[in-house]
Length: 196
Image 1 (tube, rainbow, N blue to C red):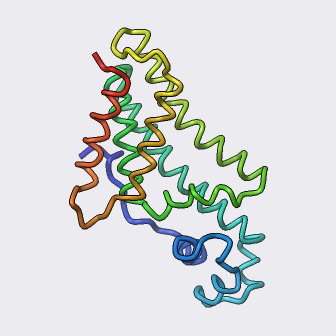
Image 2 (cartoon, rainbow, N blue to C red):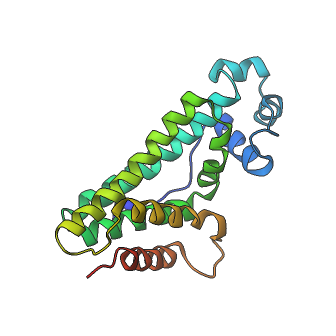
């Protein structure tokens, strides 16, 4: 099995694990630092020793999320070499598998509206990097005559948005496995770029 297709269970420090659970259940705005501290079994001052505030907790979770997906996409691209079809297929597969296996972390994208301007800029920079990798792969495929789209930027953006949607519907209990969903999305992505 290719290493980048494996997404082991999340191992988060207790404060982040509880925070993720609370934010997914109740939303960022309705999640209180007091509730997080109580669930972890520490005092609020003890929690603040580790994280400056609730915003810092959200940003730590988002940084962790983007590190996971970036590492997997980078590994998929490295394995694919210079072949545009293999690169796009690998990137899409890595993203979909992330969305399926780490749905709670993927959900946090919807909380980006709660970020301060500087934290939002940092998060968008991470997200834009992934979108840029898709766009550059599609552009390279167009230059080599493998892909036929006349708008690699819009295509990359649409493919990323499509992949992100997996977190909203995928269920580990089925009807599809994460691998089956990823294979479907690879086929859709290749059709979107008019793969020759």
